[in-house]
Length: 354
Image (cartoon, rainbow, N blue to C red; front, side):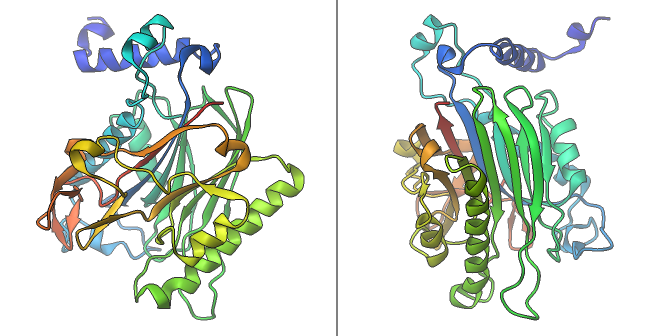
């Protein structure tokens, strides 16, 4: 029996999409009207269900309060994979225009910054076993001292981004005795266009304990980001820099304004839902019935001049009805109760003309 015979129609379609993308690999992106696609997504506790003796991950065990079983974990992996796939489906090009240029409206994201992933095991499952297993993604990630084991990761397509360097950047607590937080992830590589990109993936400390009490943590992270940017620019003054992640602050807050004052542009500040006319989504996160964004993307001027568009992906299946009106992200948990959803955040999608 041939391999193709055993494959489902769904898998054959996905394979054809992938082959189409690969066939475009030797051509210029502008010939195909396919921009360089970057996405950022907070996965909301993408934990496996195996205990790490060095971390406080007890709540994500099958016999714990959350009852985090392998079937729930597997569903979560496939949901995250589905979100990432759909981050590549909205190219904002008319279908007839795409057809006349031999281009296709489906293009997997070239880079995806992920927050709230537990470890290497979860990333292996996501890239090699979930719905993304045929996409060919590779990844790099941090190994942070965060007490729960939360890390950040960067997925990349090796056909459109050639990774040349990556490392973690440790954040020193602002005061003695404070708990350690997540590392920053730095990655450097060359896009298919030949442009060298510097990426900093961020998951800043939460607002636990209140915005004011926790703010020094996030200001420390912002200062470390600026130091890293200055270091990059000392060697490459015209560097193309992307800083993205969950900053746990809003655009008006001190940490974000500090980063924005360093010749970096928050391209996501006015982003709304791709389906805004239906969903009325104006942020990546909803709290108390109000949309706002804890997720942000900053660019250096060299990339800001090449932005095609930036939006929030808000497909219907990623949302649920909000009792306070409208929609909200379809999260995996409501407190300790399993909600069968995807994440309490929505992803940002950025298209660049490189």
